[in-house]
Image (tube, rainbow, N blue to C red):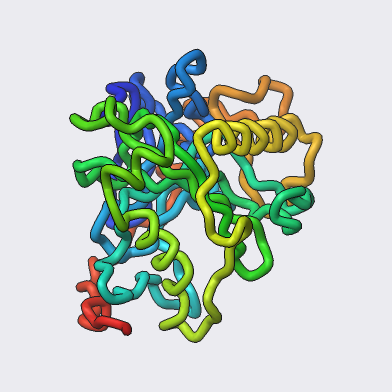
Length: 285
């Protein structure tokens, strides 16, 4: 069970399906609320990638019920490179549900459109989380990354159950209590695609982190974009918006619990687990 004791993850090798407290399959993109405590600005986070791991796992936004799967490129499973001195992802990495960075909306601050995904979160707490875990996080700030011409916000947050959570209330606390961590975060996002032959990423605001209030404003704006998406007021494109709890029964996005179970049952079973390639341990400088 997750930290919320409301959701569990059914982990096959790939994909990972999310279930609610009643044991029904749900979409981590659409069915899990954005806020765990709206009054206190505590948000839900779906963990896609545990800290120190390399497999590029993500919510499959174009598949039914959006399971968590490893990204594939040119027929090969994707792993992020180890960019010295970093090992894999340097935080628990995931997304806030019921948010969407609209690719048709040009952001006033970045001058770029959204990346068509839920908003990303870097959780900086002391515990390594599990893939598919749903945790409650306190937002501290945000970094505005520009990835191949698209706005790709990176929210900095901490698990509210972390032993040190009470000491972190804004981005300045991260700079003070974890010296070098924010600089490492910018360095990681700037260079992590270079070993794949891509250019360095850039950032709005000269790579400076914006504070908690700015971050919450950005999150809530992406929630409004998601609401337009789920109400069919925005173009979904290839996104799969089927959900079991948000859309009314007369909506084409509505999926009953029985339909969800049947759909998952029809998916192809995973093949034999493959060993992690030795190349994943390579260092890049």
